[in-house]
Image 1 (cartoon, rainbow, N blue to C red):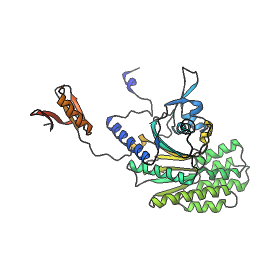
Image 2 (tube, rainbow, N blue to C red):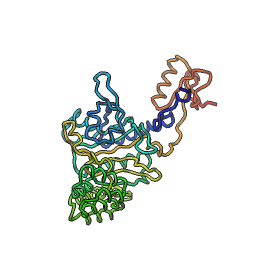
Image 3 (cartoon, rainbow, N blue to C red):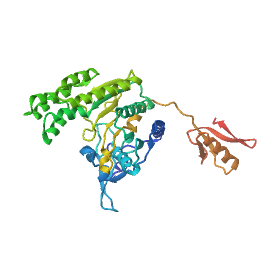
Image 4 (tube, rainbow, N blue to C red):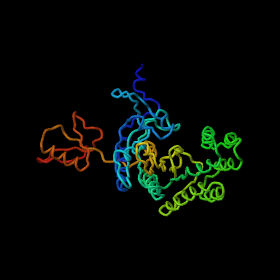
Length: 389
């Protein structure tokens, strides 16, 4: 191993150096304070858990993203969390087990076996909020508004596009086709890629009317005219899809009441998290950033695997992705240099300054720390702050 190899990090794993780390911490605190002001209580799940609880019920995608190792105490398989959402669901269902509505938030590092997209980090810092115990559209609207408020707090409020979908549309249309499990997977893959030729191949032998409905999903994206077109298309053949379309319209209307200028984009073939989402799904985008900055949706009954089915909706974002787009903050004041002395009066002066938010750095050599633009000097028995010449 060469000296170069010793300091290299794995692909997709990065360190956060002082200036950016300070910005990240300020933003993390700002967002957690935002969630607290909305009534969301902070939880801190463990970095790893037994895979039986960490992965159950959330599909193969999360399983593939999760690093696994053997616990030397129990011999059981542990997983390093790739997503904090299932951990919070476990906390709600088992550790807290409260009646009524529970609002929880979190912030913590995760680890992925592979990046979710070409430029994504394999070690995201995931922040999010989850609302349990209410299956109404009002709960979905609250979570979407909190997601938008998150991006506003990060300085990206004016250029957000909200992408809305509903897995109930696909579920209702698929139910009309009577596909096998293998066919369903092939159709799902083709629809995610919006590949009409592959859909025609996958739906060979399916009733033409049912196949046409599935293929029509590819083009059902755009402004609110999409909802009217979908309602007309599904009115006679897929009433469940109509109910999902109406839910989308209601959510969009409620959000527009508070944010009339928000750009809302509908995508009825959006299948993000299809294997565990049960209703509305949503994501937020900004110009110049190809991936969603935040996303979420309804995932009712995920707590059932922990012995307590609960209505649930929530969202998550990656603090590192936000950092790349956070507007530059104004330069903060420098620091104050203090002499290396045991003088009690000096110690008292330093304590007051630090309590007031100043950075005071002990001068261990002849020159003060380069960050210092001021210094503590003794004058007439008093320690005073002066500019460094």
